[in-house]
Image (cartoon, rainbow, N blue to C red):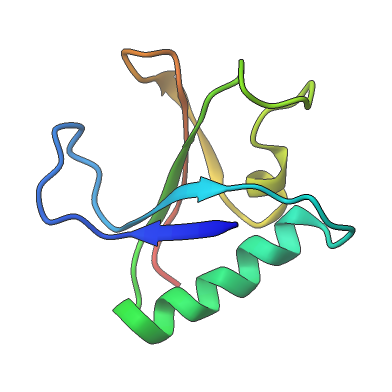
Length: 92
């Protein structure tokens, strides 16, 4: 499952297209799925900044969001008010 969404107005001031939901239960590397889905997003929304929030309590990895880092995202040093980790990738 991979869901992108683009909102005009956000309380957190983030801009671009957000990965709203992602779950990989297959054998394909998650980073490859992310890159593939970015291509689909570019077709739909045009060039854009991508971002997502990862809840470290909801993933099994010892390194939450690592698949986004492997796909070229930057990990923000700040966390959201709910403790979520922000990952972002500037327009390509």
